[in-house]
Length: 239
Image 1 (tube, rainbow, N blue to C red):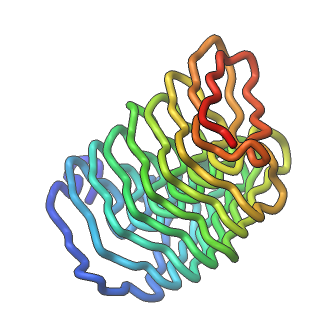
Image 2 (cartoon, one colour):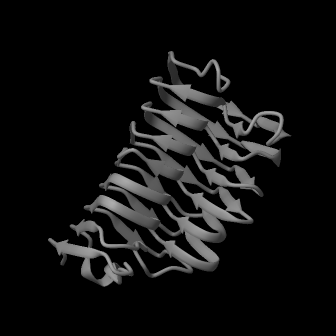
C-alpha cells in the first residue's frame, strides 16, 4: 500500500511463513516499510515473518505494517529478524498504529532498534487509543534505542495494554524514557494483567509524564517499580 492507496483488505496467512523478506529504500522514496507499508481498516492474521530485515532510511519501520490506521492484527509473529530505524520509528510488527486492535502476537529472537527515538517490541508509536492484548516478547529479543523505548510499545497516547508479557528480553535506552512494557505512556492509558520476568536492562514497567491518568493493575508487586513522572497513578491487584 501507499499513502494514497493503503491496503484496505483482508489477509489471512493461514499459518504460513514469509521468510527472509528484505525491504530497501529511503524516507524520500516511501516513508513506511513493511509487508504492508500503509494499511487502513484492514485485517491481517495468522502470519509469521522469519528473517525479516530492512535496509535504508525509512521513517516508519515495521516488520508487518509501517503505518496502520484502525486495523485488526491477530496471531502474527516475528522471529529471527533484525529491524532498525535511523530516522524516526521502529516497531517489531507495526511502526505506527492509529487506533485498531493487536492481539495474540509474539516477537522472538529478534533485534528491534533505533538510533534515535521510538523502538517498540510490538509497536513503535501507538495513538488514538489502540487495544493491545495477549502479546508476548520472548527470549532472545532485544529492543534498543535512544529515547522512548518499550518492550511492548515505545510511546503510547491513550488506549490499553492487557495480558501482555515480556520474558527473557533485553530492553535498553542510551538516554531515557524506557520501560519493559511501555517506554513513554501518556494520556488515559491502562496497563492491566501484564508480566515482566528476566527482562535485562530495565526494571521499570513504564515511563510517563504530565497531569494524566494511568492505571496499572494485575502486575506482580516485585516487578512493578513503575516510573511515571507527574502522572496520577492507580495501582491495583498486585501481589
